[in-house]
Structures are given as structure tokens and as C-alpha cells.
Length: 372
Length: 186
Image (cartoon, rainbow over the protein chains, first blue to last red):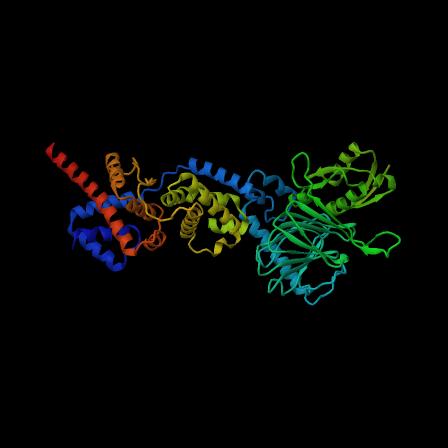
């Protein structure tokens, strides 16, 4: 036995690299030499010491790292609000203080999985949807939200969809085989997993949106005048059906607004052009907290801005609270109003608006009448 | 576990934990290639940025630790290429810091005096030997992984580890003998 062999065997043993045979060989050496035994014991003790927890430096480095990420347009902290919970008023209050428990995430994902599985069995074979969208996809799995409820859906490719109130999302059995296609009526926020080989396409009545992987919001309620696509990250291609399938690319922080009805354009001398109107706008930020207004609902905030009329706002409130709102006076429906609500009930919200803007209201069950 | 938490839940807390666990090891490793602390900070940050972007596929990586070290190495070499410097992993004159070699009062087997003796011995080891010893003892990498990372043969890694242990072990042995002798003299 050479001394070097002993050190080789000992280092292998301590590093967990020694074979059974080598361990036996080492045992023999240790049994025959007290010096070797003493060294082995001390080194073993040294090996057992756990690292000093000096985290201060690493913590500072992490803060710096997050700053760099934000500069690169990525904000991991921003992804916290989009937690995989069914969005509920109670939990919303908590996630500001503590990050949500993975367990609730699992539970929520599981329960949605069950919902989709159940729908799967009951709606198989249904090919046309009640909304009259031309379904390129045979509707196999579908999720519907009622007025007043919102939920998160996990798609088979791992992408997440947050479905706002009174919305409908469906996808076919062949989802993800070559492309990832879904149909949407209503409003949804998408966090699409990047996969360049399988484009992700969302069909709505007015537009198709094609993406590879990114975050964006689509609002396509049939009872609203426009369909909006707001892009937070990445890039999307929007195809406008009522405009000869014209394609437009969105950049981050842009939104595209397309009228749902065809508009007659052009001068009277020439043949009128009937097509959808398109507006490209920046995303709007709420002045007090500079949060993006278009996606506030994902964080359980009902938000409307100064350029919206009471009539438009009422539509949002109907869906948000699951109520019906009538205007006894058309002038009031044209008022410009703004506000932001999270935990307020419908009566608290109306009371707050009533103070700011001059109108009266009457609540009877789920029916609300607005008067001058 | 952390890996899964990040992959499945966009979990910023888990991501932070991962960063804190590997930060100092990866920085040291990057410094051994680039010789620049500042550049190394950037490299490690870049690698973690990629980790965040790829978080959904994270649970597919079998050996995350080795993956991180490899990513840091590749990134470091690319950065040096960009700066038109010749990237050679030849570790010399880079001091390696050890976080697991300190005096623990609870640890009866190794005295404070012995620890400072061990630290002195480690500082006298060739830099390459120091780094190999650190990657295996402290970062828990396998011989094979270290060989791959540093472009060395498995035999070289084995030999360098044996050398480190022999020097440290001999220093301890000397202390033990010395102690025994002085005890018998009294």
C-alpha cells in the first residue's frame, strides 16, 4: 500500500465516489494504521461542517439581479399577481403580504382540470357554439364563466388563461398537435408558453390573434362595439377578418382596437368601402398606481377611466357583479365617469359613484335602475 | 423541489432561494475563468435570467446544479470571446474562498488552531487544486462533472483531490502528534 493510495481512497469516500471494493480496501488500511484513522476521522468531521450562512452578499446580488431583469423587460415579481388561484376577493387581500401557497395553486388547477374533464364528457361532439363563432376547432373542451365570476384555466401545453366574467373559451381535441387553437368570446388574459414550432391562435368573431409565446389580453364581448388586444410582452399578429384579413403586428405596451361592426368609409363619389375600423393605441395606465388598466381585472380590480361613458361602464359592472342595469335617462348613460373597485359590493360601488357624478339609482334584487 | 416550485408556479420566492443557494459558488467559478468580479456578476445574472425565462421547462433538467455551472462556463467563454480575449480555463492566482472551513466550537474534533492551519495549507495549494477541492467538497459536484467543466481528465481530478486531502490530512496529523507529544511531556 502506498500512502498516496490511502489519500485517493479517502477523498473518494468523502466525495461519495468510492466503489464497494474501494471502501473495503480503505477499511483495511484504517484498521492497520492509527495515524490514518486519526486523519480520516478529522477530515470526516471537516467534511460534515455545513456552509456558513452568509447571505447578505447574495441578497444584495439578488436585488441587483432583479433590477437588471426589469431593465431587460422581465419582472418576476410582476408574475405574482397572476397566481394560479381562482380569483376571489378574500385571497386578493392576502397575496400582497405573503406569496400564495403552492398547495392552493395545485388545488385550483386540479379543480379546473376536473371541470374541463367533466365538460369533456358532456359536450363531446358539440360543434357549434351558442355564440355563433365559426369554429375551426371542434369544441371538445370548453369553459364558461357566469357574470360575477372569473377563473383561471390551464391548457394542455402549460399555457394559462384567466377568463373574465361572462366569457367562453373552447379548444379541440387536436389542440397542440400541430398548432394550438382556441376560440374565445368575452375577455381573457393569456400567458402563453413559448413554442415556436406550434403557434398559438385565438379565434374571435372579429379578429384572429397568432402568437408564439407571450402575455396579452383580449377583450371580445359580443355586446361591445369593439374587440381589443393589449400586449404586455413579446409580439402578436392580429388578423382582422372584416378587413380582407389584414394582418397587423403589435409591440409591447400597445393595444389594437377593432370595431366589431363594419363601418362604411370613403367618400360619396367613390364606391363605399365597408370594413372594420382599426385603432392602434398605447396601453392606459391608472394615474394613482400606474398599473395597466387593460389587465387590472386579472388582479381582481374593476377599473374604468375618464374616456368611458356610464353606458359602457354599466356593461362592465353588469358582468363584474352579475346584475342588470337599466338607464331610465339616456343623458346619464352618456356621462363620463371613472373609478376603481376591488372589494366593494355593487351597492357600495354605486354609492361611491353617486357621490362623484350626479345621478340616482334604485336596487331591486339584481335589477338596478339609473335615473337622473 | 425548488426547481419544481419555480417551474410550476412562477414562484418568485423559490427563484430567490435558488439564486441565494448557488450565487457565491457560481461567482467564484466565473471569476476563475474571467478573473473579473464585475464580469462574473453579469454572467451569473444572465444565467439566472435565462433560468427565469425557461422556468416552465425547469423540471426537465435532471441535474440543475451541474446545468448552472455549465451555463456559467459557456456564458463566461462567450463573454471573453466578445471581448476578444482568449478564453482559457487556466486557474492561477485566483483565491478560492471556502465557506465550510471555519471553526465550529461544537466540533470537538477540530480546534480553532487546526482550522487556521488547514486554511493556511489550502492557500498554499496550487490554484487549480484549490478550485477542484472547492467544487467537490463544498459545491458537491461529482469528479466526472468537475473533469468536464474544467476540461481535465478524470484521473487529474482524482489526483488533485488526493493531493489536497494529503496536505490537509498531514497538517492535521502533525497537529495531533504535536498535541500528543506536548501532552506526554507535561
